[in-house]
Length: 127
Image 1 (tube, rainbow, N blue to C red):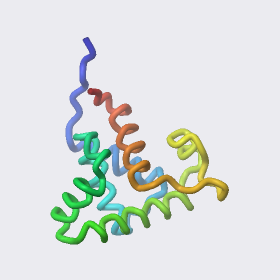
Image 2: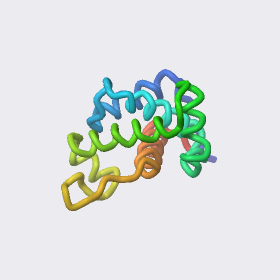
Image 3: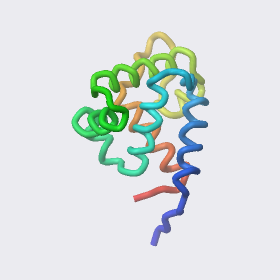
Image 4: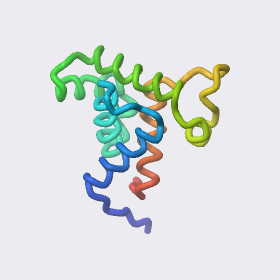
């Protein structure tokens, strides 16, 4: 039987924040906060990854009292900044390709799914 590690919410939040900075997402961007919340929600419930536009963005929009369009655009901007300035080796490890010009950046959904899954694996959150 596989045991699931118990990791506190605070530990997950710190792991996500540290990892986002390692990915090259500046904390001053509005999308940083939205993406951090999106990752926290997806780490808790990976099914949200399959319904980013139908469930995740509307939930975030309610939480931040804005529109899902603004959530999507701010997250896309944070990912673009990360892709242009971030850690090339880390992108290769996560996505299987680098952030060099011949590769397009991953979509918001791909980025969220890969990072959330990485955080879950890193923290021993399985199932």
